[in-house]
Length: 120
Image (cartoon, rainbow, N blue to C red; front, side, top):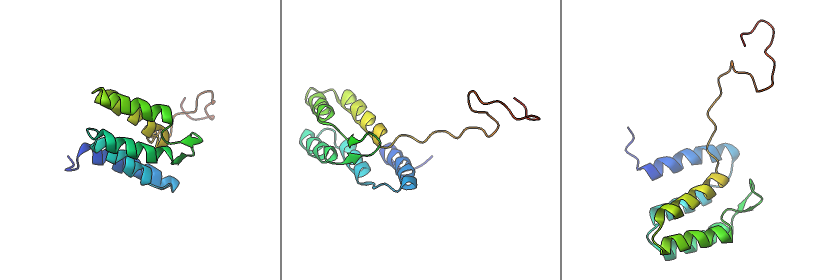
C-alpha cells in the first residue's frame, strides 16, 4: 500500500491523465489546496475565485462557475462540508474526467458485427 495520503494519490492520478493532453496542472493544484483546507472558508472562497477565472475547454466555460462557487461557500458556512466536497468533486470531474477503464480487445463496439472467424 502507498504511503501517500489519499488526497495526494487522487491528484497524482488525475495529473497523469492531464499530462497526456498537455494541459496545465495549475487548476489541479488549486483543487488540492481547497480540498486540504476546507475548514478555512476565506481561503476556499479566494481559490474558487481564481478557479472561476480559469477556462475549461471541455465545457467551454470557467472551471468553477459563480453559482457553484456560491453553493460551495454557503455549504461550508452552514457546516455542510460533505455537500461542498461533492460540488467540488463535480467541478473537478468536469475539468479532469477520470480515465476510462481499458476495454478488452475482443469486445466489439455496440452495434458492430463481429468479423468472420472471430468469436462473438
